[in-house]
Length: 358
Image (tube, rainbow, N blue to C red; front, top):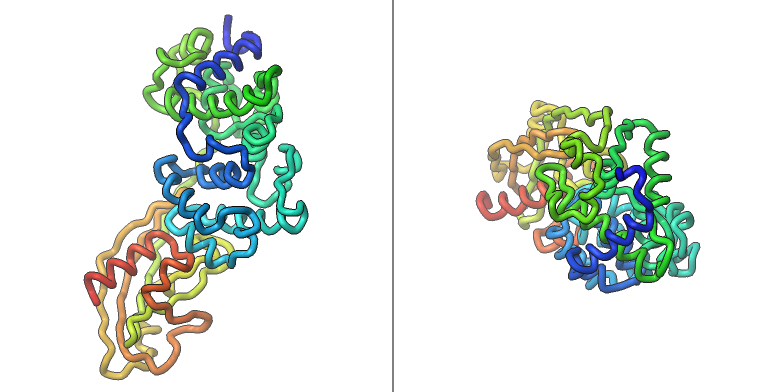
């Protein structure tokens, strides 16, 4: 019997039983059916390892214990708490979503995947996870881990770069959902599929001998686990060179500007960025700092993003500035850095510069 022909109840039952005995049952967001906490964990876990999320999750909840508290916070507060998690559009959408839940739904998350998917930053799979965990709705998820489990088990050879093929996989995922005892089965099945992808059905060296679906997994039978899922469209990478200007005034404050609303580190605070080193030096030469001006060039470093590599070249300048360096920025003291949104490499750069140069 192949994965494509095995009964759905058999599959869901095996996954539920395996999750109860062997799955992850200790994570803080597994001990609640509060949609706010589940939603927060799901957003944080996108593109981020569980070990990293654990600390951020607890700190975030301590600062914003419910959706109303989050909705009333400023964007700077939210970005400051998110700083270091990366993929900052998640934080902006998180804030917008909280505000919309309060304004449009009276502070209560809607209890269906279809309604949840209309909220900012909640895609179809995240909506399914919240609905399954919190409301026991028969709603599938199809994140990267679950997609890998299903395509291997079914031997789903269709290219997921095609929207039609993606829809077909969604339909098949729906068919496999539990039909009975949904209050317990849906959360366990959903968690079980996530756990299988994260712990056993990994991209490399899957532990098929421990998998509850191994007996009828097509990919295992064919020895072709590495061939799933099929996706022909690849991300194209490119490199960019940024020139960073770290300005420190006589009071030890750093000049920071807000990044544009779209693009890399959108909406975050950052030191001035220049495309060419000549433009950076022209800015430095125009500073009204008198003889107190001190200039240091720091070793370049590379910051790797999903689609590109940022080659960052830094010039640090200190002095007694009698005019504003650029328009639209502000001087920010070191003790305030933790309260605002700073991209992780910029925060690290400032802390390193503070401790080694000044």
